[in-house]
Image 1 (tube, rainbow, N blue to C red):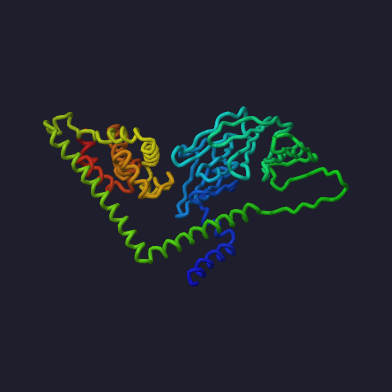
Image 2 (cartoon, rainbow, N blue to C red):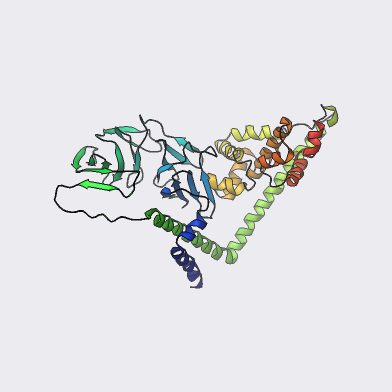
Length: 416
């Protein structure tokens, strides 16, 4: 009962704290949230914004932002989001009128087959079918099927509403059109207009001579954002509560200890493998290092790692994610597992089974390889190289570089 009261109290404080709670939770998001969707697989919350890209909030409290800056999206405006039923595949409509699909294994892919920019998008009630409208046509598609034109539209669509029986309502400036389950226009209603630039502007011409009073919702987006954040915080606190209960029982504590021991054992094996590779290289060298153009030999193990990683689809995806985050000091195995939708243990075991390398080995090799290339370029200081390779301080970078190559960055630049 005490745990329940501890969970309810933060939610009550969040609901009554108003804009202060939103400012704390969204301090890095300065534009409006335009749409949201929750993954049916891992429970993560995805939110589209009006100028800063796509935000993913995991149940563990971590936030990931996808936008044009990091090369994931072609537009920072997200108009619509939806997940396919019983899967972790996200469908999104961006500000350029392009529809994209996203999965943890394949990343973002643009959906081709539309003859013009898409104006609006909506998924069916069962979640297996999606509808999109351009200025002239209505399409249906899924993540595995290409868009199929199914209806000519008399007016450009502003919104699509799906029904339980696979029927549709197409809302346009020229009226509302009811589409039956056979995708035929069965009914046309009224003549009304919607000014998209003014959310509260809505006028309609009715057939009856009666006054229609509209209830305007001021700051509706603020309320929606508050509810979304409250739900996300509640889910996160519930997850922590369940996790703390499990770790408090002896059986789960033994199991957790075993998993930690496995991780430690795997790290020891990786260090042993790296040491063995260094010893073999040193045994094969017949000429001292100073006699080979007065500079240390390039680490050849990273090329071998890339070839083995590229031979596996799973490994190639992991390598692509690693190479795109080399300048992030906080990036590690936990972030890779979250982006790819796997647990840390599952990611480590699968990657090692398919490629022979652990994620930490690949991250270290990639950072050292990039550091070596930047130093060979000769246009960067040691501090700049450290930042570009994801090291928080130059001294930490120097230590890691010497451990990997046998010489410090300063000595290496002096030899060159």
